[in-house]
Amino acid sequence: MQPEVRTYLEEVRSHLYLRTDVEKQLIAELDSHLQQNIEERLNQGQTKDEAIFQAIQAFGKAEEVARLLYEACCKGTWTDALKLSLPHFLAAALFISSPLHKAEFLLLLYGVFISVSFFGWLRGKPDWLFSWLGYTLLPVFAGGFLLAPTISQALRSAFGNGAFPSAGLTAEVAIYYLLAIWLVLRISIKVIKRDWLLASLMLAPLPIVGCWMFHVQQAGGFYTGVEYEYFNQPVSQALMVLGFTSVLFIRMRRRVLKAGVAITVSAISMMGVAQSLRGDIGFFGLMGLSLVSLLIFIIPAITNAAIGHGDSLLDIPAADT
Amino acid sequence: MNDYSANLLHGNTDMLILGLIDELDSAHGYQLIKEMERRSNGFFRLKEGTLYPLLRKLENEGLLEGKWKAASNGPEKRCYLITPKGKEILDYRKASWRDFAKAINMVFQTDAV
Image (cartoon, rainbow over all chains, first blue to last red; front, side, top):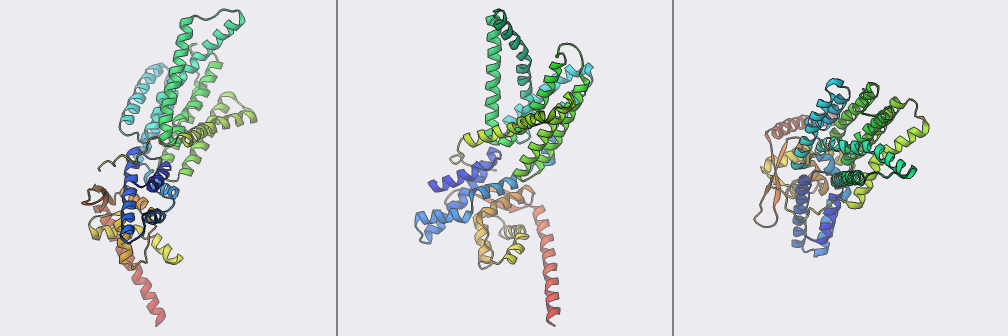
């Protein structure tokens, strides 16, 4: 493949954000077209450089071609929409389920989240996988959150009266945090390489559930046996809103609209939860939460711009279909 | 092609693509562009990069089926075939186009008289 064609196709691919197998086929098809055009121009007597330049020119701007290809291929079916939104609805149901069976429901649900995520990961990482993956990562965050008071207490006693926590406990907590950060970063980076917008959607339930955990902790903690029904309702509603947003997201073709809807709804859901749990959160509270919501989208976008799409597809032959 | 013709083409490109593939039995992207240009004496010149999104859209709608085929010389090519659903849509759109063109011609003939 000529270096100019490679550069052009890499540029197209960097704006595609589709499944790897679909991208492979598209890039191979565009390459085949360009090679035929170059060959015909060479047969007409053009020089090699001229033939390559004009074949690429005739194809159009790489970014525009990628945008049109993305819009032609990104729209999921209603079944995909259901698969993408289902984990949000299941998690919403968990929050308003009967306190008597909540533990069993939680365990069952987590088993389903892990199984579906594993299955989707092995089956070519379709778009619907990422909402399931977000809930699979949730307990890792929750663990870190629940350990935070223990750490803060240990630090307070260490600096207050010189009573250092045991080395065993310190090592266990440190290992947990290191493993949790490694796991979340590794999975997030893999998803960001595929599509930063999907990574943001994957992470969207975390601040909502984080907000809920913070308020439960403030109200007495998780081990008091008290059911915080008043706290559960708004979280359930926010997760349902995320579910409906996922349907919109997968049915829309224009990427800029997808991003706009996802950012707006995530920010409003989080502010709604905070407002319901805390009462009036004030102007600065609203601004702070808006910033957190924006960061969930900005950080993956910046990371994607920095690390790109990952490995080149141009040396791999397209899968036969 | 002027702006008016470009607008007319814009709404009918998918019909032209379906029609060409139907007549050729199976065709790849480059062949479609060349064939359309040849048959229209250079009147229809599709921007090459816009053809593949259109082919993918028609494929996702179930009107076309794409298959990689080995070529005797050169790289593999992705060839497109029309599906029964595509044929049905094509027949309907061709009939609508003929009725539309006939009505326009009748209006112009009346004008001339």
